[in-house]
Image (cartoon, rainbow, N blue to C red):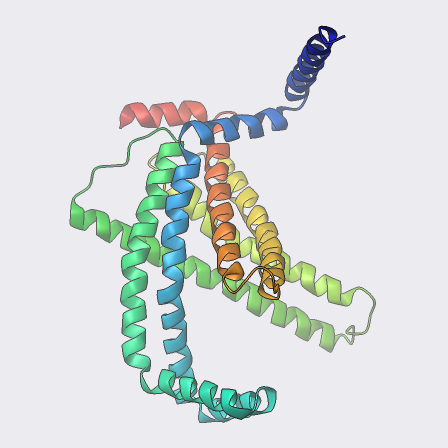
Length: 310
């Protein structure tokens, strides 16, 4: 009886292997995904994703300082908004906590210039390392060595890339916010606010606009950043895959972070850990999309030509 069990397991394993091979032959998309994942693992994708996650997590703190400074400038320019904010704090919180929050807002307004400079310098310095790691990671996925540049020229190029990504991020945010606002106004003008499904239609339009904005950013990362020639069709497909996947991860991340924030057993650092895990998943998925562009049909010959030319 014991001698038959290994044979049963071996037959089951062989049968599963044959079915898996048949599935990949029957569906090229499945084989494409498997090839992309294998390429990512061969080129140390997890290690590069960890490096990107580290710099992304560090960038959160100067970004918060920058956001505080921007808020301070806005509130200083619009005293009515400042009074409205103070009223909301008093009504929502009250007591000593309201006084503490109002003091923090006043500090942000009074020290907005210094905080903004610190935040901007921090974003620039950490952002340069972030761009350098992403560039090295995508080049590694393509199987290419990073281009050797002069120190100052390399920093300047990374700074331009960071500025381009910042503009792309603002465009993405603007498409989402403005598009959603315009859609809301259209629904109100057409008196369709109370029509069944109009609310879900608004969410769907906002999601599509977010994907359109993300498409700009990921096209830049997957097509313009690597030291290789990426066909336009393949680059757009890879950027679309990255944009849709990023929105899915964003929805899941929002849900998970919200759940961990209200967990009494997970502790006060649960949200921080959840954010870090989410950042790592986004970085890993970005590199997977880069591997997907490398392994797509018709892209590998171009990558070899670019490699031989380099």
